[in-house]
Length: 287
Image (tube, rainbow, N blue to C red; front, side, top):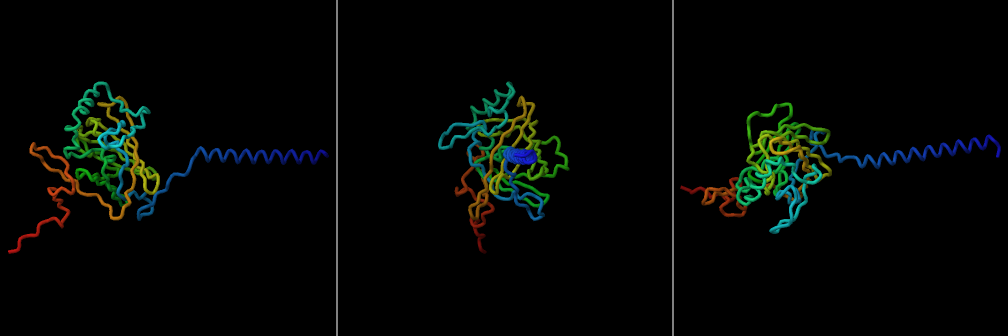
């Protein structure tokens, strides 16, 4: 083999090795990067992600967001708390006594069972659906339970001061295709679940709603409350679109018992005269 041919072979070998190395780097980068994020459909402005629809979780974290065993026909659920890693709320030691008292009296003390609105973030992972209503520049959620609803105001408007509402005061913005909501001004009477996990009026929540598929929304809430918790913590769950034909949310009505306590009643209960169900109204007497 002459010297010129040997040089050419070495050059080709070096070039092939370089190409192989480059392809390997590209493949490795793609693996690390992962699949491209889901691109949701848009509303009629062609820009705003379209979250409209009726949604509901498919787990039973509403019983206890820290996780619970199966009981009384209710399926078990893992903790939906993703930070801290142990799945437990980082209570301050002095707040644990109140949490334990709430848990002990949960059968009668839960404000949601007495027809008070669920609050944020609890309303999102209840065992009942919610409906997102939307247009360019407007966003609202109507919840089936307790006639609750939230209007998301643009974050260019300041929060209301010195208020304590059941559903709080919400400001929002878009971070790419993720809706980010800032929630304050909630009453300290609301619970986070049926187990009595609670917060004070100092609670501050940052919610993130992100579509991960045509029929799924990842919901995340970062929660801080220096009065009750030792550090901020985060929960995460998934909302699924309800796609049955003709699906709609229904009115959730309450009835006052003999002791003056309000409680939920079934939509099929004859005492539940839904004002929106005109077919059940009595016809006026003809004179």
